[in-house]
Image (tube, rainbow, N blue to C red; front, side):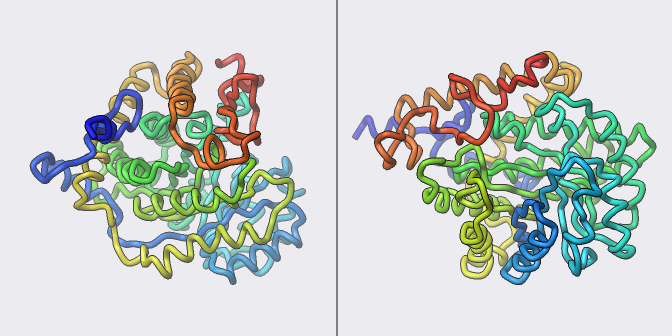
Length: 433
């Protein structure tokens, strides 16, 4: 019994951050808790935003229409084509009213050209935005980001009257998918946001406009309570960034798109991903996301599957229609445990953010190898946890005996080496690492 008590003494958030497993009202600072709560969404609900890959324009158009009839509220449209004209966006979006239906274009293509192409047939108003983070694209590919950031500034100027269109995003996926912990994700998400704010305001765009016309895109992992606290901490930290730019708190609003994790996907037992994604989606909605993309359980298969797409869509619909998660704003508020986790994660992330800024910001920290070094610590900790008994269902427990190797912890869809690494050791990033 004594040994069991030892195991539940604390909740390990990262290797450096641990919190007690039990709190009472006496443990909380009422003013700080109130401050955190005031930063959260006041209106419940989110957009069910399935991911659809643009392949054949006609077939993609049919999939978009079907998804919208079957529960989707918005679309995350992935465009891999290198040329806007080859994407045939007018055919792809035929009869989709962009003034009513938010479409987020996930692409590294010139956002200004895509906007010009799409807006021709969209009338004077569009909803949605560009799921395009030039900094993250640079980290993945090594391609220069300065021109893409310039396109962001021009698109911001062209969409001033479209208050529900967000011309760029700041993502955590590039860190999450490399093995970063929640503190690292938030710290470098903030550092990336600050880089954009500085660049955009230097181009003559007002801080208030810049701060309210982008969106965060965040990966949500399987550690249920931690991920709820991570999202709540993000909104609190966003307000702190706004204060640094002297923006009144009531004008410093954040828009958070969440996506179920690809890092924790089990490849050889894909059915377990259905339950895993449902838990991650529950964290996202309890953490008050604005938009939710649930990746299909067989997301790394060679071809799209209508069944897995439908299951992913319906998870969001069930949380909305049956679990009634859309009826409560900030459902985590008042939980002593979640309030303390939110504050603990926020404070740790803010300290790492300040450390990154002292090194010259996210770009300098990345080029100096600081980001790689810190993520490598987190990745090694994940490997250590697996070796010492942390359960990952379908991977190191309750899965096919021949597939329960440690390096199956991470999906096989991305660049790997003999150690099981992914993005961290991609050859085209060797000059930075």
